[in-house]
Amino acid sequence: MSIGPVIGVIGAGQLGRMLALAGTRLGARFAFYEDVPSSTSETLGKLYHQHQLQDFISSVDVVTFESENTPVALVDQIAQHKPVFPPAKALFTAQHRGREKNLFRSLSIQTAPFALVNSLAELEAAVESIGLPAVLKTTTEGYDGKGQAVLRSPDDVVSAWESIGHRELILEGFVHFQRELSIVAARDAQGNTVFYPLVENQHQDGILRLTLAPAPAVSAATSAQAQTMVQAIMDTLDYVGVMALELFDTENGLVVNEMAPRVHNSGHWSQDGAWTDQFENHCRALLGLPLGDASQSVNACAMLNLIGELGNWQQALTVPHAQVHLYDKAPRAGRKLGHINVTADSEAELQQTIERVQGLLG
Ligand code: AMP
Image: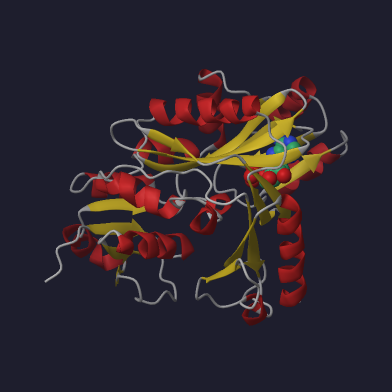
């Protein structure tokens, strides 16, 4: 008879899948709850559907979620019966760009200037005070650059309001960044925290394509700044689990874009390039186990996302130091289907291996 604790995951996509792959090594079992039906199989744990919420709750010891769009009401409901981590207030904050930025501001963490707008007149006033260029975003449900418009001239204001307006929006000053970075950290219930190294993220069409770990040429001061920011956010939220902070690297230091209250795509490299990967550390935090060393176990690491189609991934298997991770998902434009982690002794060697893998994928 198995005796391991059961971790319940709200959602059953690739993040839940990779949590289960990592947590199973620690003797945990998994159950998944989906309020929207999908084609997910039951390979890694029992799958519960909407009408089976009570059964899901009864079957688990602790619950987590894989999406920041998880309804807070659902988390609150489950939390009456079983512990849920990260806490609902982290989810609630991350679901609204205004709440999120106000939290950053309250902790003196630098963000783009911003204003919430509910009408064309408010948008025009915000453009007046923030200036152009600026980025107009939905306050909720935006991800991978969806529900956004860049305003470059006053002529763009009305058309942007027409295309994504008629609801609450946030106008942000355009940040002239040199590159995009992120930091992933894990915190346990006692407040112990471990930090993964700062990584560089390269996007295409708003979707993460490539992560470099560590981010090339970051100063110790920049790393310390990122750690201080994520620590302050996690402490104030009584956070338990893994969190990611998306950052802009600018001439004037780091500017925070947003936080993700969950394991994050920019932390997938840790499966092959860190002593303890983000999924295992999330499970350790949920289970009250000591957190593992989050430092890098290799000199250089990269993660390449497989988006829309898998390409010739079988050929990538022939490359030494390239590890293929597939999510068992049907190909669809813009959909994340898997990733390949590449490790190397030096940045130069890493670059060569990345190019070799990209060439083989076709
Ligand atoms: P988000 O949905 O907030 O993650 O934004 C998607 C992408 O848009 C980011 O990864 C940036 O490349 C870009 N972006 C978002 N906000 C800003 C901003 N205020 N200034 C400049 N670029 C931005």
